[in-house]
Amino acid sequence: MEYTTRTITKQKHIALVAHDHCKNNLLSWVDANKAQLGEHVLYATGTTGNLVQQNTGLPVTSMLSGPMGGDQQVGALISESKIDVLIFFWDPLNAVPHDPDVKALLRLATLWNIPVANNRSTADFLIQSPLFKEDVEISIPDYQRYLQDRLK
Image (cartoon, rainbow, N blue to C red; front, top):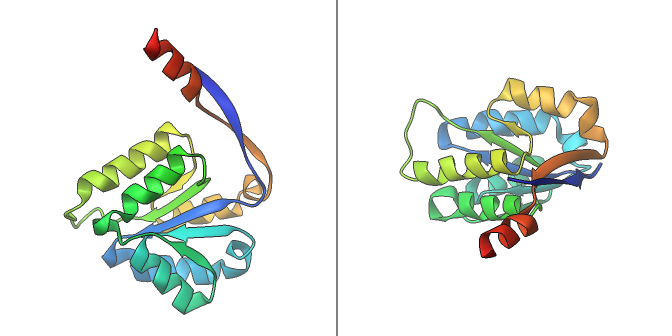
């Protein structure tokens, strides 16, 4: 596959996702980083987004709940280069009915080369990185070239 680049701007578009057993942990993390997160644009799956707004007052664009398609909506935004960072506190001990959607979301985040945090310590590393406050150029698949090659 051929690659090109895109710039993740200083103001990040951040998706927040959390499985049920991890929602309180994510809410605690968001609250601890409320001032910094307020400088960015936040998205979330339905329940998580509503909880973040209620508990912190931060504006969040909420998708559907994960099991109802919210994970897929976030994945679509990632593939459209509309999400720059994924903070996904997932529960490795409890299977969820929409596990295939979870795997697809993580696959898209990896394919489109965006930073992903799966737990609080990784989220702390991301938000405290100097790169979190800068424009950052990342390598992404060159979809136009991919499409041209497939049509030959």
